[in-house]
Length: 226
Image 1: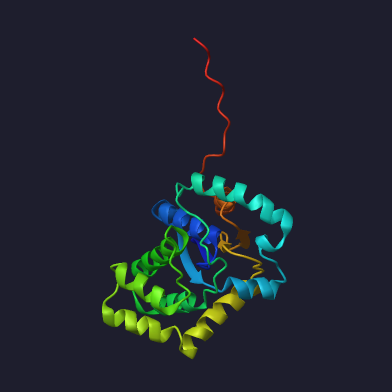
Image 2 (image 1 turned 90 degrees about the horizontal axis):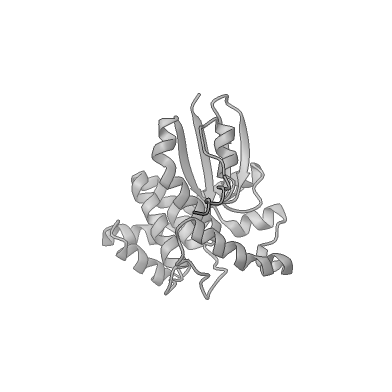
């Protein structure tokens, strides 16, 4: 049996951006091991409420620690320009519903590139508030993936019940799988076993679970003095 990673993400989540970039970077290598990846839009606010979790900024100790972890994480992933937008946290129902529609109606590559464009717009200066209809429309028009008619269709779909329900169903599925935040990964290995993984810094555990060859973190010896 082939391995598979279901990855649940929200544009409002900094760590979801890191997970998307990282998994896309490694997709081709994972495919050589017969491991596939599928990305699912969810509403992080609904996951927090449904799981009883509180976002990190709501807990003083986590809020104090957060800037250290954010700086280290974005440098490790090669994304030093990321920064918290001034309108954070954003209510991302509009883009997440739109992504459900894009996933169902456009090629996979278009869906994933659109998600990257939305993340970039929100999380890099000058920070576009993609939760608002007109700024969201501008990002879709400027990303080079859609025609003007496509953008009209995407905006229309984002307020239709079908795509509201799709996002709700995705969010409920993540909750049913134990999610309490994003990124949330549900992973099946070659033996057909399944387990959850949370966050953008647990991929080495995931590779081990999938039975993949990988290099562990290693401290190198100090160079000998001449």
